[in-house]
Image 1 (cartoon, rainbow, N blue to C red):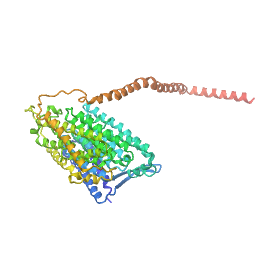
Image 2: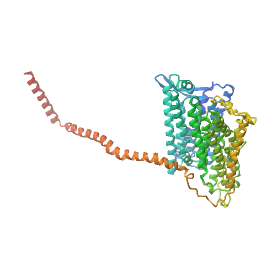
Image 3: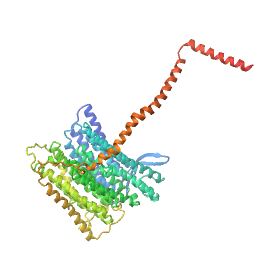
Image 4: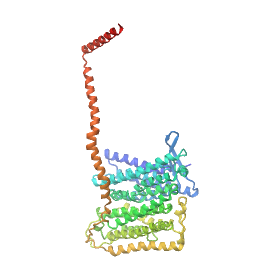
Length: 628
């Protein structure tokens, strides 16, 4: 059997990254290697993995049985074996397909974006390693192997966010992402330890865990579910561990596209879907997940309405859209959540890459109110970003409409009307802030006519066209029956969904119309305020929303400052006055003892002979006295 090819989906980008890293070292130490050589390895890897993923997709179409490949025994503890194993099922292969396809397009875009960078080879070394880590995460057949990929994307995100390490702010952003994710990772570790304890001897892969968890007390299951959730909200930047996501914009724009579209931030949603068998048994925890998603979606959308940095607007947009996904998976609509992950990968990658093209054209300007008129200067970028904006706003027939509509239908059909209302309000705000961005950047008037634009290579523009097509067509795999279509994504992932929704078609039609109306309202408000916006009048934003509700400042005051003070106390008070004194006291005691002993070891032969005679005399005197 060719099950071993499952491992090669991960190994191809992994080996490519190792080759790129070796070549980069050779390039800086020996002789410079042309960028085309780096590109050959970097750009080929994701598409080879995509082709391999397609082959397994067709195998699952013919036979839906889960495909397992155990490469080798990774751990063996007291007869308990854990394999380095890979699993292909409907969920993992679906994730592989769009991760590799969209990731490959981002690789092509990055080859144009980074072409003048001295660290071109190093960048793609990190990029391919990031892709390999994400593929390992989704193809792992057990939580432990998943955790390796989980940590891999965390490390690579640190390397890529702080790629321009010469600027200390970028390094701080990388550290912030790394540390915030470590908080979430602690939850994942605690969940794994608890599951390992209760798993018994059946095994620690997902199939055996699904069987073993059925006999675990519900209180323990709730604890495991909440611990896993901490890991999920860390990776997917939900309340309260979202603060790293806007700062992650410090990395090059292709990094933002890869992290925010198809890889790292979707890992939390994937985790909840992967452990669907656990969350189905603890619906109260699932409802808590849905509420976190709802409030995160609304909170991020509100902040996005006042931001001026084009990339940070899109960053908060990502957090908001991930909130929709958490609503779906929390309420048991796993296929709806994964459907939105799929459509989001296309239009969000397109938005980031389009924003990057504008940034490059304007010599790395990121303030939208210093742009304007780009519709005439970059018509292809404008047209593709218009499509992506229509998609994320939920305007039919673009991709985001179908997936977002299904999520809101899941909330309404589950009887969670408050969550549904939050989702609809967020939809209004989404359309508003996205069209605000589009109108200001591309339709703004009275901008500097004589500005000189940087040219855009085909490597940067052609992926936009492909993603634009995806942003139009991707939603058609989930057309509801109400519109005479077939929800293929629901059929493909039907094994995940814990409950069926029963909503009358008439009500569903009203809900769909309301969703469209919400998007149109947001669009019209943005049109009235920002279409042909006078770019000579740069607004000066202040207040709570502009300052992102002071969450970073609050965290600094409560956590960062307190930890700094504790660290200073330990370092300069406790360590010097207590620990150092004990350690140095013991050390000085040994030194003094050594000095005493050293006096006896004088290397004076006469002294040694005299000491021996004295010893013999003392012993002899003692024996004579005793023998009497």
